[in-house]
Length: 287
Image (cartoon, rainbow, N blue to C red; front, side, top):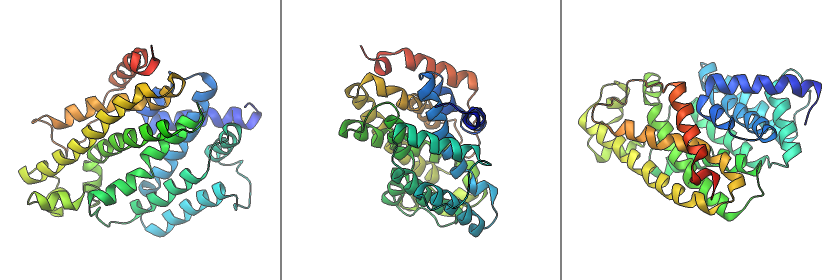
């Protein structure tokens, strides 16, 4: 999977993921070289879609950018991709590993929600959103290592929900500042809180109870995923290594002295140490 353009695109993808999603970047360090390159292309695509919301001030330009990616993956894009190293590398990986485009197309569709300020109404709505983003990414990453199976898809679903819910909580400071709500409004209302409690950026007892409820949902999925991990072939487990970061994140978020509206940046050394320990454990190595 080597050519001149690809030799330039691959390091571009690596640098993009390293700068915007260090946890996933670090997880690829424990994968074989060819699979690592493919993972980085997939994760770079995810970064590109995720940060569209940060690059536009109105929904329409964001929709145009997402449509460009949709046309590319659907095969209706007319024009070259030489000027877009992420696109060229992603297409190369899809072709080389026989990855399906459909999950990536659904991921783009679901991220259109990011462009608007509609609140996430219920847990079911959040599950629908997360299902097509985080679990889809785990499942597609797993296809780089092994053919699709029911066991791998089951693990990807629970791993993705655990990871995705934890990301919703971690992103509260940023989302509240731009008046976006991914924490289910249903949770806030059931605990006597409201959307303005979140947008104010001040922790209240009632808003904290709603956040703790989502932490509980994430923990439930994490426990299930950790139980399913030994049931999939060891060769595919590196695709799930980012899951190793979730337990520590949830533990920190649950502490009484942790303010969910204050940004927390985990040190790169801590991320590397956690992933190194996980990669050496029987859960990810097998045996």
